[in-house]
Every structure is written in structure tokens, then in C-alpha cells.
Image 1 (cartoon, rainbow, N blue to C red):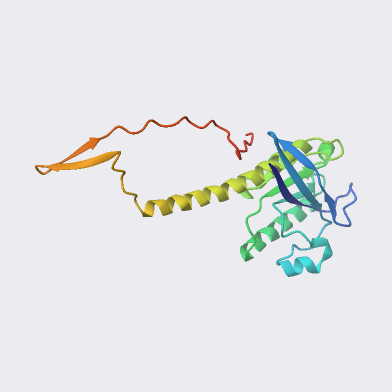
Image 2: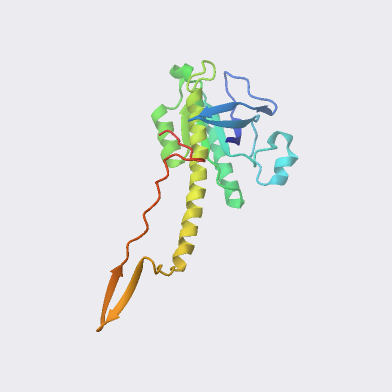
Length: 227
């Protein structure tokens, strides 16, 4: 089974790299745990504000597609403080649009330029703690120049999407379970019968049918995400 996910990549201006000027679309395929995932990665140029509705999204050609994605990847330069502030602002604007009516979409913060570690402006532990503990977002540091931790970024991306789908599935199962508890089904006569004699309730248990063979673990449709 092939899954298709749309990913939006936004990044602030950097003193080293030339920022993207137009929107680009990349179509890689990622194989993870034996499953193929087709990704539609939309690389957006720096935007001043995140569109608050679909009308504003389509009014600006650079923003088209921002509302219909499964994950946001916000990239900043670890050697540029303004780049981190840009990511911080865009993340906050994304959260504000969710209040208006967008669905829950995971956000991953990526610290690029890891090869220029000596020029870092914010300690790695401080950023990681802020992003993971306070913002509740995924965090990865990588080096696009040397292809370092790029696979880790894709792994974090797919795990974030899978966790979001699991939350929705779990909520649906809980809702269905609540509905089942509303009506208590009658106990089958073939299993138990109650006999009342002389004011005492005597429960007689009949033998149940022998259960069929158990299903093997990891059947069709099961996706195993590594820890």
C-alpha cells in the first residue's frame, strides 16, 4: 500500500544560503519498514505572514498549497538568530490559524547548517528543550550541504504523520466504544443461564465453543513505526 503525504517547507533568510525565490515541488519516494510513502514536498519562499484562510492563500501565488498539507517543516539557520525568530513567528501564526478552523497538523523544526557548529548563536540544548517541551514539536538538526541527518529528518517526518493518524484513529475507536457501552447486549443463552430457586440466584455456566486460531501479529494494513 502506497501512502501519499504533502509537506510544506518554510525557512527564514540566511546569511550563507540564498533563500528560495519561487515555490518548488519535489516528488521523492521514501521506503520505511517495508512501506512506500510518496511525498509531495512544497518548498516555499520566505513569506511575511501565514495565510489565515483559503481565500488569502490563493490570492498570493507563493502561498498556494499551504493549507492542504500533512506536515509543516520550518527550517532555520543555527548561525542566524533572525532566522530562528522568523520560524518562531511563522509557527505562532500557524497555531492561530488552527483556532480559526484548520485541522491539527504536526510541525517539525529543523536546524540547518550543522556543519557550521562553531558559529551557532543559540545552544543546541536550549533550542531542543524549547521546541520539544514547550512547543510540542519535533526537532532535528542537519546539514543539507553534507547530507547529514537528512534520513533522520524523513524518519521524524513520517513518525509525526503516523502519530497524528493514530490519534484520530484512537479517538474514533474510543467514541465507538462509548456508543457500545450505552447499550448492554443480552448475554447469549448458550453461554450462561440464571436459575432462581428458594430466593437464591444460581449461575450455571455452560461450556463455550472452542475458540478459533488466533490471528498472527502484524496483519494487513498494520504499519510498524520504529521507536
